[in-house]
Amino acid sequence: MSTPPDHNGPPRGHLTVRTIAMPADTNANGDIFGGWVMSQMDQAGGIAGVERAQGRVVTVKVDAMTFLAPMKVGDVLEVYTEVESIGRTSMKINIEAFAQRFRTTRRDKVTFATFTFVAVDDDGRPRPIPAPEAS
Image 1 (cartoon, one colour):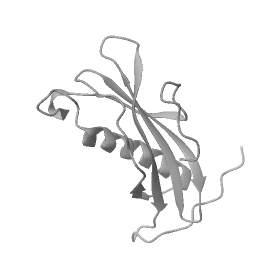
Image 2 (cartoon, rainbow, N blue to C red):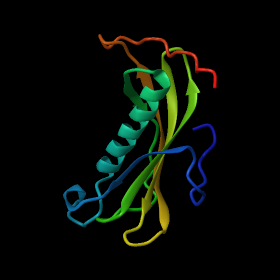
Image 3 (cartoon, rainbow, N blue to C red):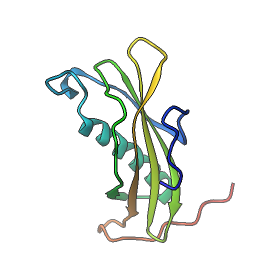
Image 4 (cartoon, rainbow, N blue to C red):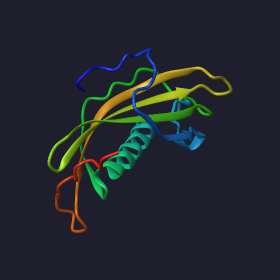
């Protein structure tokens, strides 16, 4: 990431995915699997990537991910995305995951990472990312 996120600050970027943690997503201790959180982050990054690339994207890299706090059953996972940089065929997307704690309005940052996506054509070959549309 170009600038590390503030562990206690508000989310950066756009709310892209919001879902509830269920019992099937837990380990034996009742904590939500880190892999489930990472999967939701990958989906959110894919949504943001498809919107920006105007077509199919694939995940090619995830920078180091540190889990800051556990999630529990009933917490709502909120995943925020922000495009950090765009190359010819790839882009880096900063992704932050927050837990809205069950039956409260409290939010805790769970983890964050930078995911790299590559725009691909229908045959899975890298393709250029179009220039942004003028607003």
